[in-house]
Image (tube, rainbow, N blue to C red; front, side, top):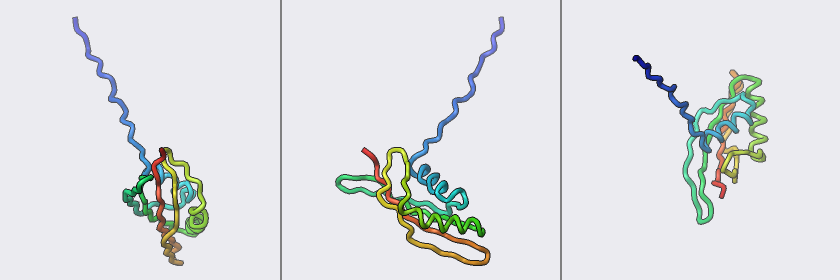
Length: 118
């Protein structure tokens, strides 16, 4: 009697989406998909009562329509209500803006302080 061994397909690995990835997604959504993240770094932060990370993100908007979206991004970022699971946004600020007219390009550097909930 011959039996074939049935090998189940490999389990799909679910990539862990942490605060960094969720913040990146939220920033891209705030930019209406018209910008791209050029750099993103984070540094752990803690006090006696809170822990979290300060994120520094540089976003680039290239093209007329994209630059307009970038200008809106600058206006709305400080008051935006982020929804990041397990995190509170304690501060969100634009710290640097660089632009050129031809070709239209806008780069926006922002800092966001995330605090762990709980």
